[in-house]
Amino acid sequence: MSKTVDPASPQPEGAPAEAPRSRPGGRPTGEPSMAREPDYQTGRPTKVAIVGTGMVGSTFAYTLLLSGIASEIVLVDANHERAEGEAMDLNHAVPFAHPTKICAGDYADCQGAAITVIAAGAGQRPGETRLELVRRNAAIFGQIVPKVAEANPEGIIVVATNPVDVLTYVTLDLAGLPANRVFGSGTILDTARFRYMLSEHLGVDPRSVHAYIIGEHGDSEVPVWSLANVAGMRLPTFCAENGIALGPDTMERIFRQTRDAAYEIISRKGATYYAVAAGLMRIAEAILRDQNTVLSISSLITDYYGIDDVCLSLPTVVSRRGIERVLRLDLSPHEARGVRKSADVLRQTIDSLKEPPGN
Ligand SMILES: NC(=O)c1ccc[n+]([C@@H]2O[C@H](COP(=O)([O-])OP(=O)(O)OC[C@H]3O[C@@H](n4cnc5c(N)ncnc54)[C@H](O)[C@@H]3O)[C@@H](O)[C@H]2O)c1
Image 1 (cartoon, protein in one colour):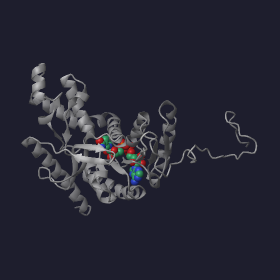
Image 2 (image 1 turned 135 degrees about the vertical axis):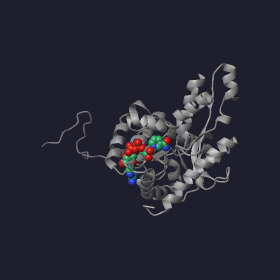
Image 3 (image 1 turned 90 degrees about the vertical axis):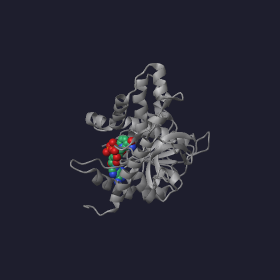
Image 4 (image 1 turned 120 degrees about the vertical axis):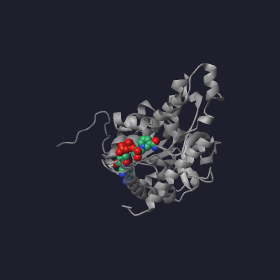
């Protein structure tokens, strides 16, 4: 069978059939780079690696591409074909977006990435307990994290896989990187949901609602009502001034809708990925653009209301260096009890990982 020739790209006579396509840097296109690709304006690397290119990882890649803030996106997945397919599909969006190099790669290709986001993991099997799932995902992280850290000891690792707080702790242990360069997406999503639900009730743009969900990304998370505000006005004052009712029942409903949103979405469409991808994008932007943005992410907490040596979320200043500092909110006694309980729940799960299976 004769070889089909694409008339749109005629080969000059005598040219090799598969001449390597190269760009000014001399590297063939379609392959991950091994060196940090600096942003042409800032001179900083803007390569982002994503491990786990399922719904969350690939939606994050798409969000990142549309944002234009990454020069290169490397996709790594145990299912390499899936990563390749995602890279191909994303590359075909480049002409509508921004010049970005997107390719499927291996762990070694995380080298030079400013950030590696880990969204790889197993889903819950029917009848499987949460703890069994934690064990399986911790085992998966045992395969992933040392390879990422070895390939890229200078980079930042952001964990998205659930249970995100426990896996952030596991990642810290496995990576051996400084604690300011390992964190989880934590309650960034829950905080966004809370601000959205509040904005619907208060009738203002969610970006003008300043309120945080702290603690575990999960059932024990804590809404910080005592510090929530619009334009610096605490909610009781804002609501009184604007004739809005905000009684205990409404507050309970808003928090319940926030906390249980994932269950509601999963029961309808099977997974959540748009909002978490947008949250991961916000984290990436804070890092790549060195913004010192306050985000509720999960990191190693010490000496806070009696909490020590667990990863959970508090508002945190995020910059090029990763975590600049964790903001130690002054909580009401009720909120402080809530976050301590959240830490206890997480500590129990971390401890149970150390026990042999079946205990
Ligand atoms: N943190 C948050 O706010 C948040 C929100 C939504 C989902 N999540 C979590 O994100 C994770 C991913 O969700 P999803 O919907 O994308 O799942 P998914 O099943 O669509 O994708 C998971 C991907 O991980 C890959 N994978 C599995 N084992 C691997 C390994 N050893 N090495 C490399 N890749 C591997 C799979 O091949 C798959 O492509 C889940 O744990 C989910 O609970 C977190």
